[in-house]
Image (cartoon, rainbow, N blue to C red; front, side, top):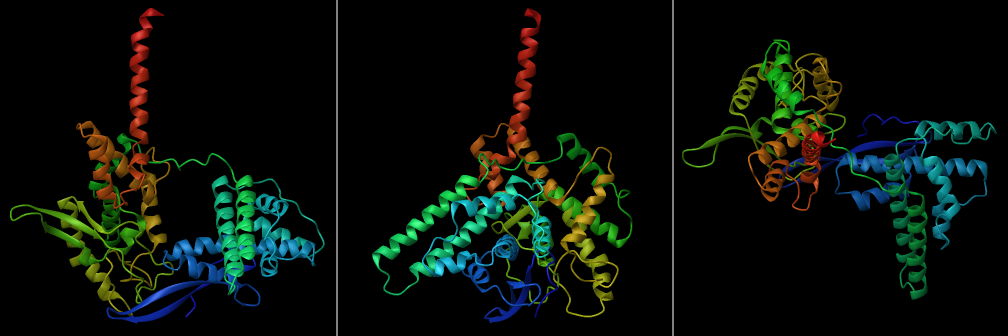
Length: 437
């Protein structure tokens, strides 16, 4: 079964098929992306095989992102062939035992890789009318260009290994050719990639904004008093107070909420469980959310947990009863109006809900991920102010964020706190030296 085509300006198009798989745990759906030609509908076999074999265990969104970069690469190939019909593609060259791309061609790929997909597609269309087009000079972010080049390079390296080293009874000289070709490709791509790529800035609300937001979210007057308004308030609180990713929140089921999780015979806490589950055959959302981090519980405020329980038993139950068709969804947050009443909310719904927070004065940009950044920055600052060591804070951050032990995310979230310490030091120094000026 095909889902609606993921739109783009490129001649190669991404489609997602559903494979229903039976297992001991029952039926489940596996979504597989395919790269096809927009006009003929024919499969781009090698790029699709590459994604399936090397990224088959990764999240669907990751596979689609790589395929989109490969679609960009295929459009560039079309442009090169349109300008020179005798030009051999990397696939044809590798089959003949030749280098996939020359250094000059990698430079040309990099030049176009700095433009938008729309501009590349329009250049190809104009080339079909014998109008030679050069890149306009309007560039995309360097991180976007680098990502494209990295994914295209990985595909070409896989192509080289598969077509040369995959031959039965391969001779040593052919193996050496494969290694040499891969080294040349790596060097050519490394020479054109932007140097000094930095980790993305950890954007979050200021401490004052975060504290004020907490007060606003406890005020029932900000959101409407409708069932939808109560849902929106709980979603905003959960993102702000628990630091969940958008995919984690959208994947939460009612059974993942435990308002009285026992720590001991006398002590309980409220938690939501972050669980990595396979794709759900009954989840009809176009882009199924996914959990990227490790599984585990996240402690939440007991009042928030109590309000979530009331939502499940009242507003959510009413929406479920109003659904027109289909199975009862297990997911926590559902739609309360329109044709999707009683069905789980989408990422688009979630973004719309959080965008309402921009109505708060001085709140320029708020998103689910900004709230996540805010939560973990606040967590670092709070624990640091209580005298916890860096090792203790890191351990706490890893536990609550469900990152792997090798993750550098805790250090990223410490950046604002460190900047504040630096600013305080400079102010104190200026106060000391001012009388001597």
